[in-house]
Image 1 (tube, one colour):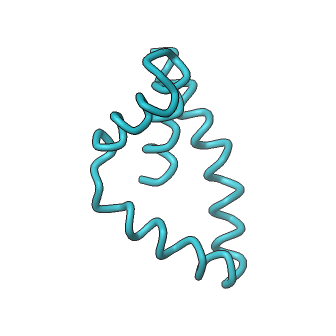
Image 2 (image 1 turned 90 degrees about the horizontal axis):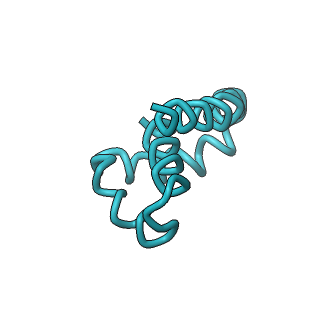
Image 3 (image 1 turned 135 degrees about the vertical axis):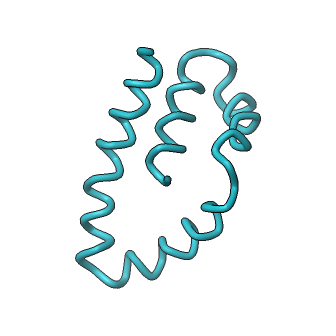
Length: 73
């Protein structure tokens, strides 16, 4: 439960300011929107093996995976 809440907190902390900047300005939106659109059809669980390779099997990888998936969904 702590992993989920920490991941959601990280996602909210990163996604809120980013989203307000993307809405307010056209240049960041034009750069980021294609990247997010490419990653949108990929299910969040498909990123799990990558995060395990990059960050290991500990809490850090799990928290970052939850934050990443919830920030971009």
